[in-house]
Image (cartoon, rainbow, N blue to C red; front, side, top):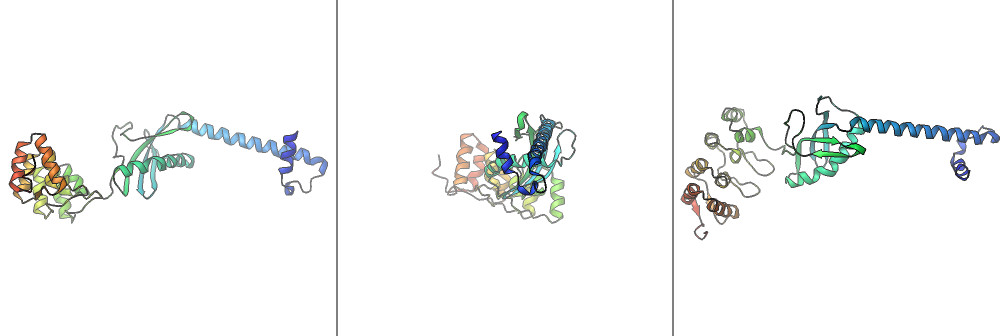
Length: 272
């Protein structure tokens, strides 16, 4: 009764105007009953909505630039696009919590990519960093939007596509956010030669101080190192990255790589 009286006094007078005082108590009860029914129905709808998504995995395409923009959300199995605002809001909430750390770890200012999010019982969700889904493949979780198709094609060793892109006007010295170029991305000698012939900067350094030569030496790619040395690549041990690369090559026993580096190496005499 005390609770009812408190609620009665909270009902705005404008809702009771025109109602005889002796009937007002009944009207307040009806209002309360209607409100309780509405709340119950909303809660039931929310529960059913949540249950609908439990166990489901959705694929989310996003762009990041000081904040997340969800481009597309779809069911991983059926590929059907999901427009449910409640679901999108829940995904956005989790993405805002998790993505900044991964993007910072990738040393990016802007990013794009695809992630998968799994709905767990009780309303919890989990972003899956690894590739997932019925197809078993997917885009990288965090990608650098400044990475050019030329860089990717050079990395994949697709010489014909590299030629085509250069002929279409692609800049061979374009850099991504890490300062990497197509020449640094190349893993095959024929692609490397072509890019050098097209004016690729042989001594360009990324944000970590790496060059095409240090990257090739680090991974023991003798043919790549030989070609770069032959073309006049610089290797100077006053640069911390060059110095560390030589030390690693020696630890790993890359004798042929070291022989090639010694042809152009400067200031490296004191390194044991």
